[in-house]
Length: 442
Image 1 (tube, rainbow, N blue to C red):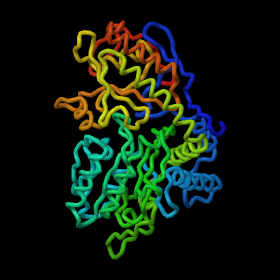
Image 2: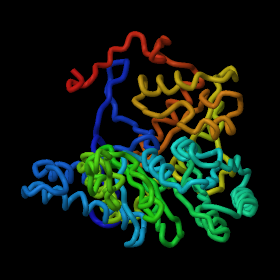
Image 3: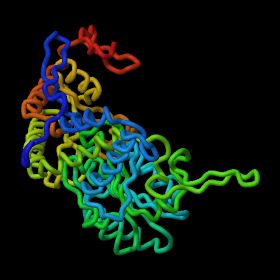
């Protein structure tokens, strides 16, 4: 792969079975949930595995190799998000884990400012802090205004502003630089949920003056169970460990019958237990691979597919695209929508998604996307879990996948499913379902 080339993904030629007995290329339009593995990541993991061992304090040669790979991964992630050399890189399980770690580290009496449109990972962790709910801004300028007003009202104590880089519901890009500037003018600190941003756009957190960034490997084409919290060390170094256990301690003693603990410095302070070395290495390889490919090529690929996806959906009778700030606002290839059937009645979102997979080999997502308040605002109704449908493109998406999806959805809304489906405790299922599962599932 050279500069300007789209990195390849594992499973790009995967065939999936349909209920009519045919096999088709898997149309993976669910990148916003989890992206497929980059071929370079698979190769990087395979190179590491023969050398895999425990990290830190092991004297064996493989332990030294593994430790070096793990610590080098911090540098790759730090460079990928544009963080300064004095920032900490803490490996976590995912974005949710990273934001919960930071929530445990905020000083007492911290006021947290966040919007109702955030993913639950950014919305819910701040239970030990005072939370200022900023609602749903009607326009980007309104987001800046309500944040400015809220910060002007609360001038005492530590304050933290939570910003989402890209909406996981609508794909709309948030005005991160402008919101961060508002926070800075009021002396507040900023954490950026970059889970949906970094697979699609470059990030320079130093230039933005963001204090912390949280991201996930599985959104970043490295689905090996790692994420990261990157940013300022002060709050993190002063906090009790996120997990108590081996590796987080510098000294544990029994002093006159009283157990005493001296906690380790960063980053080990918040990485207790045997770390996910393979996941951290995979994430680093993904960061290096995407950077080497060049963002012009990646953005160009996704921009073409997303434009066709949005235009095609807008042309299908019964489809309503969801968005907060209008079709001209910058967005990535994440599109949510609701559908009605040929008679104008609301269609069962789950049944639509099930039929697309069973009859056409297209994988999309249904539900409220772990952003119930945002979906409830956009869809209407009292229950945010009633949901919508979401199609999202990425490096593994082809033009054929998009066209097949658009044609299949239009046909499904016009004529209904071609197969029989039955509702069970596990949701809608084709009846009969002749599709065989792969052999490795036994």
